[in-house]
Length: 196
Image 1 (tube, one colour):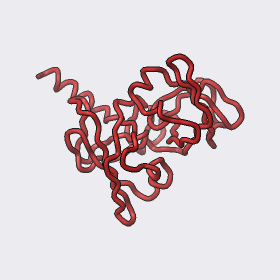
Image 2: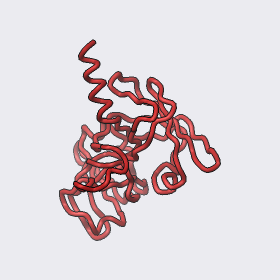
Image 3: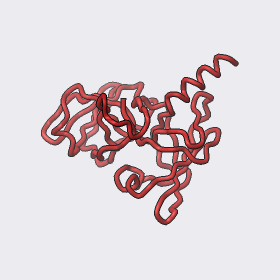
Image 4: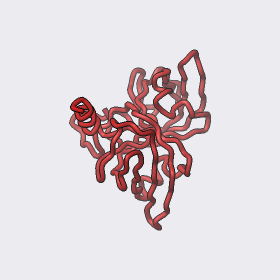
């Protein structure tokens, strides 16, 4: 489990395809604190550390992960949002995030509000993928509050700290991101679908 509070950024230094798997080697200031078999959220995707070499570590994304997320679009030089799994008994500053991406979305608008930013996203229609006004959404692993909720689109307001310390400062119209919808909302949507 994660909280959606990004700890730091990591830089992809190598990408290697092996069959249907993708091995990503990254460099981060957290590498010295990692261990083999540890789970980390990379742009909201939970991946397991399989190798550590100095300041670099390697994770593997399997075909299922590549089909549901934008992880396969990473290349050497890409920057990713990074969060370690939450510790039992720690504060939950964001919301409950599983690290299981539901779908991807495209950035449709970026509005600079002179001190904050409004980012809008559109995703494929699916009755199980819902947002609600002032509800939680995870964009590339970042826990955010939904504004302007619509059937298959929403916006988020970004404060300067989040803009400076996550990938949001690199987003532009067309940027593809990973989405994880609120866990409670997903259960409610599933129950509602069964009653139809």
